[in-house]
Image (tube, rainbow, N blue to C red; front, side):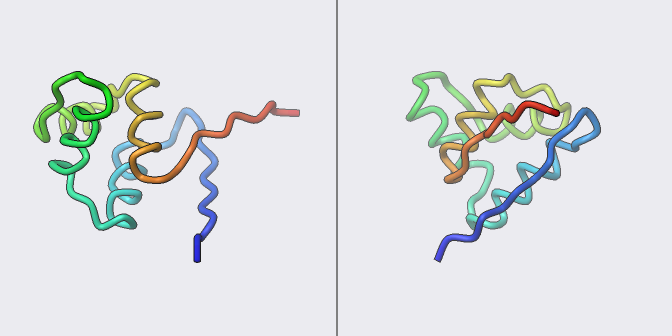
Length: 81
């Protein structure tokens, strides 16, 4: 049974906490995330540089999309009305 997780992300969202929460839900380590990111993107990622990017909140948009894909989520942009 899939559980729908909705997170409103704004300029104050702590990406470090968000990614760590999603990793915990999937019972995945940063090392495994880095391996899968390398496999899917063809770009070499290590657990150290992924951890540093997450902690500095310097992930690129395409990296966050890739992380979400690996963890079984998608980014859904909605117009603010």
